[in-house]
Amino acid sequence: MQTLKHVYISEIGKYEGQDVCLKGWLYNKRSSGKLHFLQVRDGTGIIQAVVFKGDVSPEAFEMAGRIQQESSIEVYGTVKEDKRSPIGFEIGVKDLKLIGEALEYPITPKEHGVAFLLEHRHLWLRSPRQLAIMKIRHNIIKTIRDYFNNNNFLLVDAPIFTPAACEGTTNLFETEYFDEKAYLTQSGQLYMEAAAMAFGKVYCFGPTFRAEKSKTRRHLTEFWMVEPEMAYYDLKMDMDLAEDFVETIVQSVVANNRAELEVLERDISKLENIKKPFPRISYDEAIEILKSKGKEIQWGEDFGGDEETVISEQFDRPVMIHRYPAECKAFYMKQDPESPKHALCVDMIAPEGYGEIIGGGQREDNLDLLLGKIKEHKLNQEAFEWYLDLRRYGSVPHAGFGLGIERTVGWLCGLHHVRETIPFPRMMERIKP
Ligand code: 4AD
Ligand code: MG
Image (cartoon, rainbow, N blue to C red):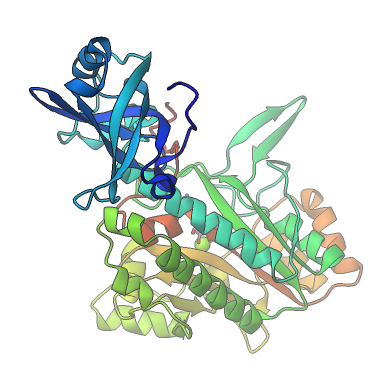
């Protein structure tokens, strides 16, 4: 028996009628007299293994009756078609081997509070719902990498220790760096601008950090961001790329993750509808929408979660809001030559109230204007000298954006909060496990 081929549950259909070995964990169990029905999971799926007293040794039958949820076992038996099974097959068990016996498992099929589940995140990951989310996250990341790799972008990794702020100084994580101070990166953008001047079209993809002191359902302190940056691109080309990119991600999830979306009870029709073109409105138009919906907002203020939700409810697909007031955006945004109070930037807001998933725009390529912005924002010019060099040596129009992975996973999975979108979430009040 123990020489049988090890197969994964996701591929079980190929072995109908054959004897195989499964290696997994006991997910659930039901017994009646001479039968034990074991639900076995192996990370690729769940299958029912039927243990009939007459087919196995007395020791194996006793063990199947005794072991508790999450005990690890090897199952030897015959793959049989079963029309009632969600995966179409079950295993007729011939032998069982106990690998590691589990103590009483803390996460039972009954409902648990989120705080308890987050404390046990290392175990919570074993549930079918978390598997569905992680598979969708995996496919989103694969699609992103394929998209840029197939469109002549060069992957350029950005550093994590940085000497200066990219996205404002209020949420920097500071750390000691020998005799100096360093900060965990908030964004790889400034480095991607250097790389775009060297290589044309580039992207980085990595973890980014923000000491977000707000406890919202959209904020993590450590999140993953993919950031393309393109030389000789203006704001319109940037928006065209963002739109095509997001459509590709959503349609890949619709095509490849139907089973996972069903586990999550996601309304797939809402995602199928996410096709180009996406609506594009200016900040000034967005202000009009907000006022007409009774929101009190002054020109010049950035939008928060509430405003984003109200605007997104007007559309059935992501909306791109461009040309925000320069005063509420980062120092590197290019000023609109036709209206210097506005910046040539864009935010993409997901539908159904999932908030901003992309921030980006055209960068200030004029040395003097950029110097002025660094002063206005009270940034330490010395720390940005290398960045200013990019404007001294062959400056060109360029643009890019950053897409937050967790917000995108949250939207596509239909999750209320970003805490389930990343394997081990980091939030203001959570750094464990
Ligand atoms: O809009 P942000 O701050 O843009 C930048 O960092 C630019 N430098 C990117 C660029 O142009 N290369 O962040 C980009 C995206 C947001 O739209 C959001 O999806 C995500 O990153 N994000 C967060 N996700 C989770 N938790 C947080 N605290 C986040 N902050 C930003
Ligand atoms: Mg933003």
